[in-house]
Image (cartoon, rainbow, N blue to C red; front, side, top):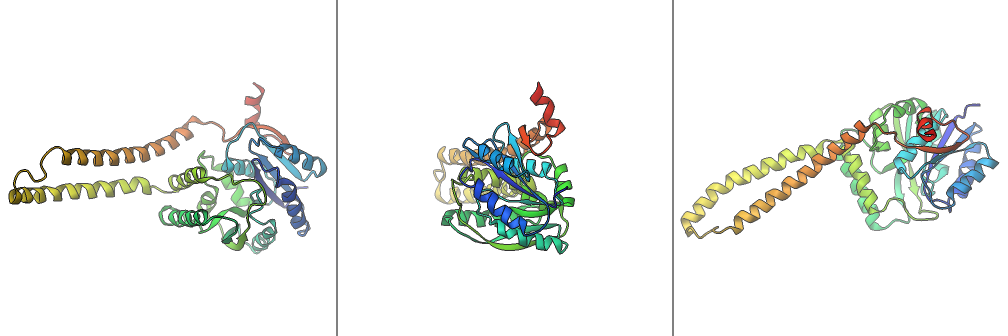
Length: 322
């Protein structure tokens, strides 16, 4: 029987959370009186995560496993879960239990009311440092201002999507992925549900500051041309200042003598300043070119080593049999 709901949970070194995650999701989904499945994507875990997942799948056939050949990253793991999900509605949730599974019932209620995307809005974030909260709020507001799609503030990947949205999402195969932006770009009827984000139950965050910066950059370059557009404004400003400086320096030299602004120091400082701007803009341009290169190589988004309870996609079979 086809499940009504598919719950997707990417897993990376979450051995301390897997059992409780399954228990809480099962307790919630049993209240729906509808068939459901839990699709766990093992994203190259190095702890006992896969072993625990296999044990759950052995005892409950509703637990499905996708085991990656290596670590491909959170957004790719979510993508694989979407690719394999068979439910009429798909729910994305992290395995750290910061997003309470009990909120799924509210997401389902809005879906049954006719909404095709129901995203969870973080009204409060427990167990996180002031720096993490501040940078997260700054990130969401920056993305909201400069991207070309209306991405709701303070929302993560915790959401429910109708199968109509999922079908479109499966056609979007870009490598540098920002799932919450992609679902906003797709459109359809969307609404939000507020919830309190809990502290991580076990383990360490999989998004340290370095990964947060990379994630933010993927979001900006994937949905905005603002970094490229700002180059023309800075170029114009520097050109205006250069033109303005010519008469100013001329008047000051006439008034105070040729030694004013004399020597090579001024020239060197200006050259260093211009060079720094040029290198910065070349870096931005290079990032967009790198994204083009990623797409033109045509590599698969992920490589599946094994599955439990689901069929392996055809495009993954040939490379593994070579």
